[in-house]
Length: 379
Picture 1 (tube, one colour):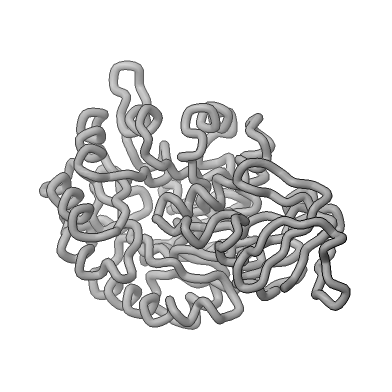
Picture 2: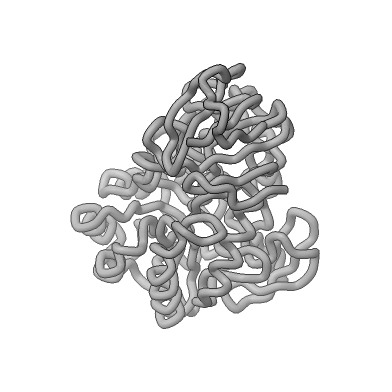
């Protein structure tokens, strides 16, 4: 048994102080300092936060690597890199590239998934397949030549590794594909990269979509006569992604989203291979992207993913809304776990769950990352 003392413990219902978190491979519980055995391994949080590990369910790349490269060493490098940002589990995310490249990426991640529980990095929960089943009118930085009509069979046949997929419901066969995927697999269907209007989006939700890909971006906007995808997302119980880098979505909307979506809001990074790298030129899905500060753009100015770190997304959201901090953290831990059905073992410091824990300073900079009860990273 191991213990973390002198920390502010972030639970799914509030923050506990003057207590100790005990764990081995799993979370054991909350106790007091007097209960720590003399010979126990004790970690001093030095007054910082003791938080559930963060979960990034939408991340394409990091440190020069990209999921769609289909490179095992690259996936490991991503996992090791994001661990230093407090991410203890993640969904490597593909995009609209050729089907051959997608199949290769799926095979590589499939081969690594079990191994990732033991390696020096964030654990793989499954693949997020963002594309190719999207609308070319809202392709964003996705490559139009590789866009396909929705293919339920492909998703179902690969449902052992795909846990989340984006579909534009208005495309030919979209509603039928969503319904079939939900009937025959546990894959979560997200609506995104779509030109669907409000009514079409609601039909997609009725067909079985339960998630919205990066709200406001690459979808029909909110208008008082045309509520669009955004209007449907705000008024229904679908889980809803937000890239909280203050560039993709203005920070002035964070408070509204906090109030309207509550525990259905999921903070993501949508990070590209340029994440963790200097400003400059990189690639995304075979297209050049240009990075300056928080901005990631195609040559024509189209937004092309981000370079956001998930612990910074938490800070940005905290600084621009009045949610209690434990609820903000939950948007990057428990909410994404629930969105993909991983919350029985991930997402909070509830006893019995995997001991995926981060210790941070008071500004949520990562001090230690613990995965499966083992310290994997120390700043």
